[in-house]
Length: 159
Image (cartoon, rainbow, N blue to C red; front, side, top):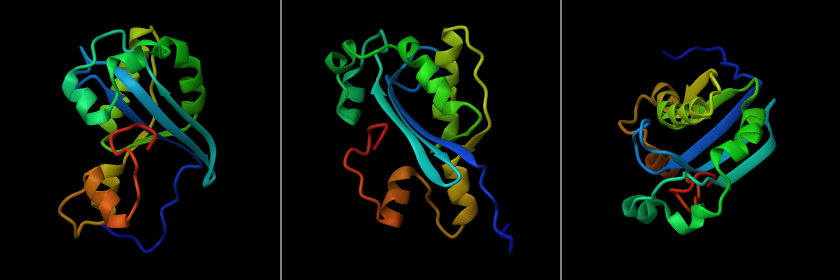
């Protein structure tokens, strides 16, 4: 339903994307994270890092993302980055495309460390469906094309 009055976004947002070793929260791990913290409409912090998943990176993930096991072997672990990640997420709405996926992985990574992470989250797939109901597709590739964004590495977290 469309409204005549503009909807106000929260003043603190963190746009986040992850790359993972696969799609299972139980067995797969984060191998890359990219984050933009926006406060009052301005980007105030940027963060990106490869993450050592402490497990095998499957060849299909390497082909999709370009991230190899050798690249993440020397990267910091999620434990090493937890404080920086928590600091960026503090008191902000978690924003991601298909938010259940990224939010689930971040929440699970924290849970493995004994940290109970929870935040409000906003899914840009659902947002796109609400803002642009005339379109049938709302996946990230379609949205990138629709708005003419230029993305160098489509399957990398920060890009």
